[in-house]
Structure formats: C-alpha cells, structure tokens
Image 1: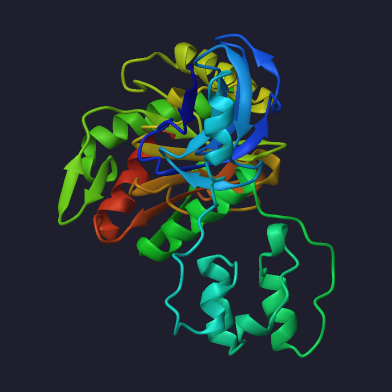
Image 2: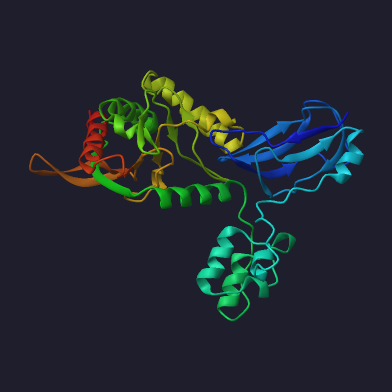
Length: 358
C-alpha cells in the first residue's frame, strides 16, 4: 500500500516550509519512525520520522525548495512506485501559468521579489537567462542586466535559518511602525552572570503593569495576553534563534536561569523542538559584549514590543554630586506605535529599570 506523506503544519501560523535535507533516498527501504526528512520551520530545523515503512518510491520535493503545507513530499511503499511515477514533482512557490497573451516575463522562473525588482529597474525578465537553481532568474541576474554588465561575486542561495530570518524581519519592517525608547540603567547591584533571568523576571512583573506591551494586534482588535511567555534571542552558528521561556511571572530567578541555560544549549546544538520556538508574548535580547552601546531591535512579529540590553561596562557617572565608577548599560524598548503610546512604553522601560536597579 502506498503512503503519500504531506508537509504537516509544524508551527503556529506556518503556511509553508523549506526542505532542508532528505535523510533517505529513492529506492531505500525504511521502517516506520525512521528519520525521513529535515524541514526548516520558523527558526529551527525539525527532523520528521517516517509515518510508514516500505520502499521510498519517489521524492517529490528537492532540498532547498519551499512548498506550502499539505504538499506531497514523498511516496512510500512498493505499491506506490507506479503511482509515484505519475505524480508530478512539486514546484517551489512558482507563479500560475500565464495566459497565451501574457508577456514573456510571466513565463520566467523567478520569485515575486525578483519580479518586483525587475519591474522597478525596468528589466525585461523574458530576455534573461537565469543562473539560479533550475534556471531561475536571481536578483543578481536582474541587477547585472540593469547595470549593463554581468553580476560579479559569489552567489549563495538564501535558505534555512537565514531565509526565515530575512522573511520574518522584512515582514515586521513593512507591517510594524516601530519606535525605540532608550534609557540608562545602573547595573551595579545586578549579578551580570544572571542578567538574562533577572531581566526576564523584571520584564514579566512590569508587563503586568503595562498589559498593552504583552499583546497582539489582530485585525482591528488588540488581544491582551494573560500569559508571560518571553522569547530570549540566542545567537547560533545557523543564525538568530528565539526560544521561549514559559511562565516567567511564576518562576523564580533560579528556575529561569536553569531554563534559559537549557534552551540556549539546545539552540546552539540545533535540538529545539517546534513548541519551544513559538507562542512568545514578548522578547528580550542581550548581545553582551557584542551589543554596542545600544541597539534598536526589530519587533518579533506578531508581538508588539521587544526589550534590548546593550553592553554593560564600568563608566564614570555622577552620583550625589560626585563622579564615581558604576556598571552602566543602555536599555531600549522598541514598540509597535499602533498599539503602544510612547509615554506608556517609556513608563514600562523605567519600571524594568527600577526593578533591575533595586
């Protein structure tokens, strides 16, 4: 009996996924629950086991292709060989077939982004020979044509975590009108080894005072969330990952420290599960020594605010009329101005600072 395995919904709001790596090959015999394929979801790679045993009749989606949820990825089973031969291979995010009178550019293999760029630069896609995978026209092809020469430099396909980060950040940039508030914080009384868990606790307590920062904008409604599941940005070799620390308002600082360490280790090892990367209500980021004086982070859509801590260092400050040395850093809050007024964002930031300094 043949089994058609379709791309499942692996995360909150997921509509498509990238085939990161096949763990089997056509003609291979596999058992149920054997590793089948790695699929790139929102900032993590998920290994999916085979739902059935048998021979891999045909793999229908190539590595690196992005396809919608519900697309048949592979056919498994001896009886499925003939059927698989008739099954067309999935095309990754291609436009619909053009009408007979549609311009040649409509028949070119190119992403919507490349088509838009070609239109902006006045380049006829129908005149270009694509240099990308499967003959796709790339951004470099278009820019090269617009400049009247051949595009230079090494090309590397945007995929995996980097593709997801790019798409996620672009969406946030286009949809969210961001404003950033910045203030100085005295970290002299803070154990910097526990900076992140202490900040999570201070943020969770402050969010209860300012619920509009722990919310989402859905259509013409603001949804105020009554849970305090805070994402923590972690830099890995694959890119920025934001695992979620659940129930920050209920956990102790020690419990938060243990959970942050566990999630950060899993993020760097690439073993985070989908449930550990979705459903955050607010995000905290701290780049440590790489943070510069301050940062203006992009809001982690669909959240409405994010808090960042810049580099904490010994600096001269004035206290009681005297210049003294203190551990000082800048705390910034970037927020969606559609939902949050500037005064409320500032009051929230000051509430976090009071709790950290206290």
